[in-house]
Length: 243
Image (tube, rainbow, N blue to C red; front, side):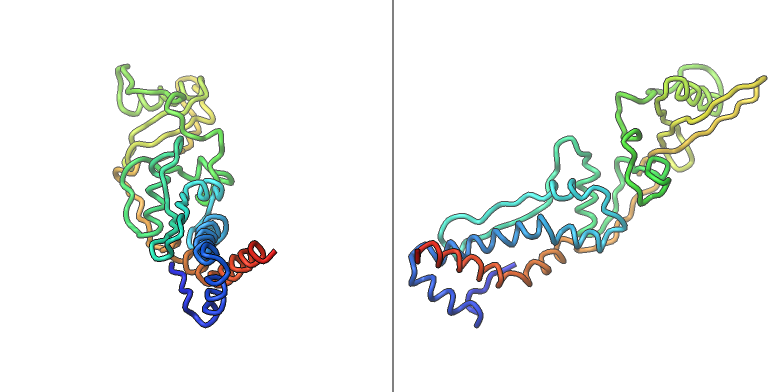
């Protein structure tokens, strides 16, 4: 995104600013560039994401993932204000990588993804229920040391899941998955249980992300406002020095 101060709409403003005070023109340019990046963070990135993604489940998290580096100084030729995606503390790498893939497209083949059983309304577009957030310290861990078949070990883990109200991992034909047991009964040797899959590893079934260019699109949305931002900042300088 580039501010062109030589357009018909800006030339007159720029000339007046340069005559007003030596810092008026560069200050207006600098603040205009910063207005653009803040507009992207607060408005257009989210608008673009909602347009391009199937669902934006945590808008506040998306905004927090955007880092702004403000323009500084008085040299308009080297002045830049930038915005980009960052890795947040206490947020999985998969989230950050997912946002990057949404921009450029690609494949996510590590980590795990939540399934509809973990989400509200049992829908892939729903937000993950807080009770289903993955916590490695609250999972029945490790492989079963008891003897038996793969199926009997799975049943034993499902039983413990129900008893302790904790999810458990189990291997399937689609890869490693995280389950929780909603119901479990054993009547006269006949086991009945209700198992809900919460998460699935991406090692076998990868997540393919289509390129959306949502950040670039957000930049274009903001660019359409740049002359208005420049006019606003120019007026601020006039008020400042013509008191």
